[in-house]
Structures are given as structure tokens and as C-alpha cells.
Image 1 (cartoon, rainbow, N blue to C red):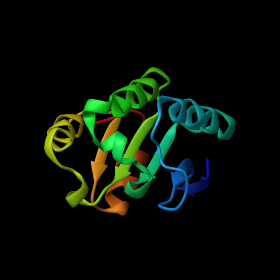
Image 2: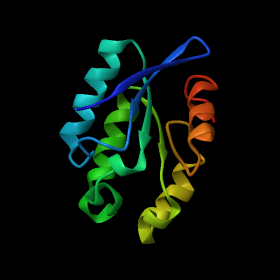
Image 3: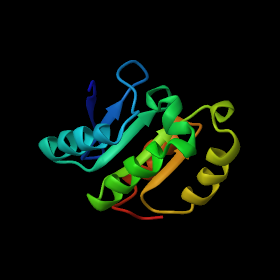
Image 4: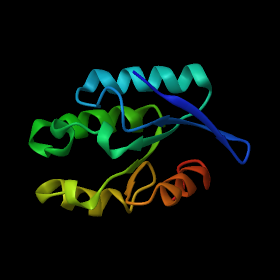
Length: 123
């Protein structure tokens, strides 16, 4: 899985830019957790293009399985997603998850980065 390591304000985070393998299976969460552990950070910033259509369709169960794994291992995730891709049940899901402390979606990269770096699992 293609990624970059960013350092900002003395903190490291893993960046999944738009080009690359999309997150589309539960196994992808395992790979990303391993990447986080290897690099000493549990902060993950995902460009929306890396979220597969199966991830965005809640009925597939991909988003739930992936996000549950991230929560179990303490990976704090922010995604930058064009609001046009958030539809139906996924849009409702985002309204709920954006109140939480482990996964949030933003339209702006800087806002997503700020939330990730403001502290461990804070809301």
C-alpha cells in the first residue's frame, strides 16, 4: 500500500494520497495498522480517492470492519472527501462519526490535519 510519512509540529502521520490502492477490504486495515506501527504513529490521513466504492456503500460492511479494526488498535483517522461522494446511509454515518474521537471526514485537507494533530483521540 502506497503511503507517505509527514511530520508536522513534531508529530508524524501517515498520508494516503489520492493515487494508490484504495481501501476496499478489511485486510487493508491490517496493512495500514502495520504501517502505522512500523512508523511509530497511529495518525492516518486519507485522501477520499483512496476510499473504495465498497467502503462508501455501508451495506458491504467494509467501512464498519475497517473502522472497527482502527478503533481496536487506536488508529485515529481523518479522511478528506468530496461531499458529492458522501451519499445516502454513508452520509448519515458521517454525521454520527464526525462527533467521535477516532474517525472524522472533512472537505478540507488542513482541517483534517489539524484535527489529527490536536491530540490523541480527542474530540
